[in-house]
Length: 192
Image (tube, rainbow, N blue to C red):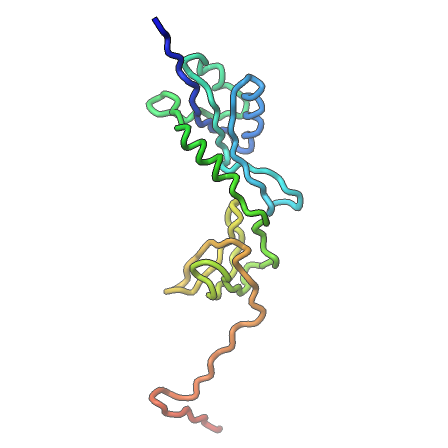
């Protein structure tokens, strides 16, 4: 009788905050294949550092038919293994492959602004669907290198954009001088 060998599958492990690399190192030392998607962080420090693309998560390839759950669930820094119906939920190989292929497609230039903006600064959006619009800079929002600006569209709308898509406006745009009251009637100044 031929026995079919079940192939190892990818699983998602949830870690405690800032413990992704610690858990990955322990798992690798125990012989497990891991995948911790990381990106280069250009904003938080002058030297480029890698940060997890999915904070508090990493992927581990294993076969739970041959590995006891207790062998991995008590690793320091590990919060839990993502489950469905109390069983570890496998991640399809296509999903892992898709992340691996698309995570490597990164801009060669870091997406950092060439100017420093302060909250309250008037900025012009230079790229994207809001190109040419003026906004008020509010501040950085996420580790995904975006900033939040306030647009005056039907009231005030908050929008997140890349900092490289902004330029500082040094002076407020000139106000248009009214010369008529409408229908060609001139405005007369009242002398006092």
